[in-house]
Image 1 (cartoon, rainbow, N blue to C red):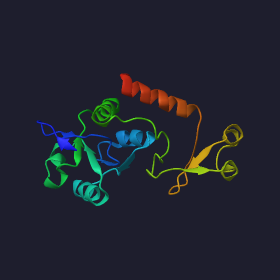
Image 2 (cartoon, rainbow, N blue to C red):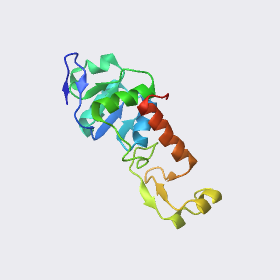
Image 3 (cartoon, one colour):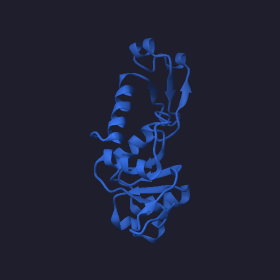
Image 4 (cartoon, helix red, strand yellow):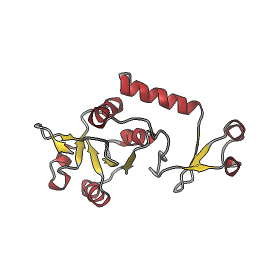
Length: 169
């Protein structure tokens, strides 16, 4: 990672660990959807985000021009230029070629990698129709949220394709 002439961070290859500031909750959720480790806490203070980035080796995603000017942030920030999540994803795609290889492998709430859940273990924890029509389940070991494929998964893939290829978001 380095900086271009304008001082913006230039990244070669996707950073393995990210942290989004309080203004980028939607972006953090979409990055998690794509399988990226993106920490996010609503209302996190700049000092706390900097400390966490240093302690955990994370790259900070921010729209805060004051944050990127702080000494501790130098070399570890990506300034997100737009308010639009679609444009934000496109910017990150240009910077480090984000992709959907890890699609739905992280909890959208907790950011923890999901673990496969045996179908029988999902009985009584998912709606009866879902249990009857789905064979594969994943679970977050932190919050116990259960995930499965369905029409929402298809809609999410379509939304990601629209966002990355030029449609809305």
